[in-house]
Image: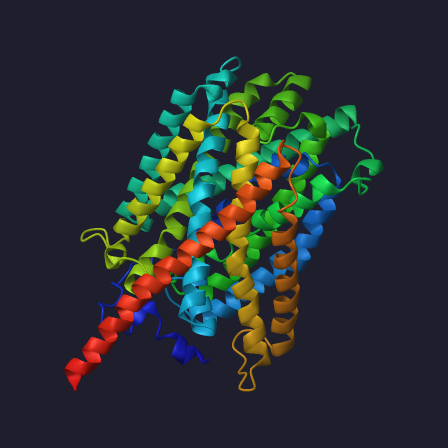
Amino acid sequence: MSTENSAASLSAGVADGTPHAPNLRRVLGRWDLVLLFVVAVFNLNVVPSIAANGGVTVWLWLVSLVLFFWPQGIAVIELAHRYPGEGGVYLWAKEVFGDFHGFLSGWCYWTNNMMYVPTVMLYFVGVSVFVLGTGHEALADNRYFALSVSLILLSLLVGLNIVGLGVGKWVNNLGGIGTFVAAGLLIGLGVVIWLRFGTTVTWADFKIPANPRFVLNSFGVICFGLVGLELASVMGDEIAEPRKNLPGAVAWGGVLSGALYIGATITLLVAVSKQDISVLQGIVQAVQHMSARIGAGWIVAPFAILLSLSIAGIGSAWLGGSARIPFVAGLDSYLPAWLGKVHPKYHTPAAALLVHAAVSMVLVAVNFLAVGSGVQETFQSLLSLAVVLQLVPFLYIFGALLVIAFSPAFVQCRYGRGTLLFAGVSGLLTTVLGIALVFFPAQQITSLLRYEIWMFGGTAFFIGLAAFFFYVYGGRKAARKLAAARAET
């Protein structure tokens, strides 16, 4: 499949005669992309759930960076060059494997975010209460307060993204800056504590435990934490000079995100024993503990503001990016056509954004109103199923590299055949392993049976729902094409 063929993407129109995608505005420059990658890839909210398994997770980070993250960067740059246009993972899988696989890839990418965005809202509430000062942490357990704050934040992010990426990107950018500063402060405090007081962490803490069952789940979550380089390509028609700006932005975003992840994990282990790390408030907990030791407790509130800003950026990036999937699926007639409509004034996929927001709001409401004392277990269960659905598109991404590399008509685009083979094999095997291992429960899970029913049942439900929508709307699309062909004759 050549680059010329890839131009026949959703951006150029769809085969059944429905209107082609509107002219979306190219507003994302190189440094917008770098900050988008950092805020999308480096999510401090997953660090506590990983660090809670001890120092061995540092080795898992390094393995994942080499075998998953680096190949991901190669895949994103190569596929974005071969198949430019709006849709990213949806478009790539469709071009290489066919319509159903493209839809399934995009569907999993989207539905994963239906669960992930509520976890971001939950994390935002847990962190933002520290802005009010010591003694207000219990507000995060107040369901009505938590629900109200979550829905207000989600509504604000949706509104900004509907106005357009020209405005909404500044939430992403501010989130990226907030992430840098918050991570820098966290790591800086860890260095000060280490220099002044030493650490109780020893090399023994980095050894594989005798019972690695809980650690296995971390590998899938780490792979989940490292996704995000593909996010900008989902908005491919909104990147200014993508061939020029995308490769450098991927490289900078990848290096910065990897360094921040490892530094934050080690700092958390230095500051708080793994038995005491909370999966929701572990980062602020660490800062609170370290700042108290050096007599700088005033740092906690400003840090919570920065971290809250970072979390809002994360929510905006994933909400806005993943909403492009139902937008292009609506254009391609595999979801209701009205999802492919844009706002008449702002030229953004407003319908898709509103549907995504509505589903996320329902899940936020159900999450806060249904959970009781097991908040951390609920968070971990939502996160684990989100990991599975998020990694499914990467099976297609790395599989596409192998198809391209093994093609007898292979023509080099950005990388040679050998590089694509390495990235495809390494990334595909790591993705399969990450999906399999996340079915092992994390230590926050109290009921193995309930967890496995949730994981297997949830995965089957969402994949089955994808098949239902594809074949129902796909059948209607085929009927329209047949009717159009008969009318022409």
